[in-house]
Image (cartoon, rainbow, N blue to C red; front, top):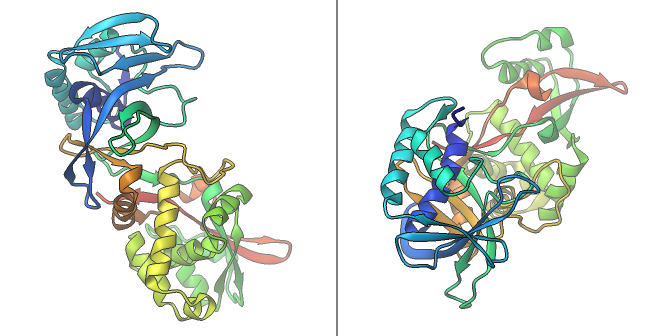
Length: 362
């Protein structure tokens, strides 16, 4: 049976092939453009499934071959002839670029067999998408690092996926309308239209709390009042015309109520939101306890729409944060699936949920 998957998962395997083929990746600047700096990959470590052997792809051997070893490097499992790997990797990318939905890639399946891979994605037990040993030119060491892999091929990737855990709860006061009338609005922009009618009926929205205690706790590790900032931006997104993170932060900083309450400059807000985006990108998950450390300690690998693969490393963290800040936007996810966008009464008080999802700009 052919192995089928979507663009995102195939792109992750393509990034793996690209590293094996070129043995290095260029560092990216804040605009996702490749710089003259390169990160040299010495070994890639992969485990396809839980409780299966770990394989180590040694890229320090002579060009044209890759020794695939066991985890302790005491045994060579296979020597892969990589002479035509670059050409086959290009063919894999063309399949990804021109295909839709889920699909198979025969040349990729052939490479998987020869590289002793049984799955497109590495094991879900591994928090990072790709684990590698790179040559650290600054410390002259060779650390083992985890990288998160994102694809810009096809549709824009999500940075933060929507879920009931990413709902923000607002209390509605002074509402003098009909709840059923509000909830029955089913226009294309129904959330925006429902909010507008609530406000026309005298209702005001005040942030109450984050629906999920764990997500609230994770955000407060970054900044104790970060949930308030995000809630304000989220309401602005659903009621105004701005959608990018940078635009919403500018609007947040200009709000008179926020100015009086926190007395922060636009740069202060920008700094806090960049840290939030960075935390999401490198390991913070809303539903899981987070200790402030990054699971993808190496950084971020991005497959660009033209097939170029670039890397953000710990050393160019500022550029990575600016890239995230300038290239992400809020997005309205499915309201029925994620349980938001309707008025409801709880303990005699009226509430309305809004949902946070963040996607990269195309």
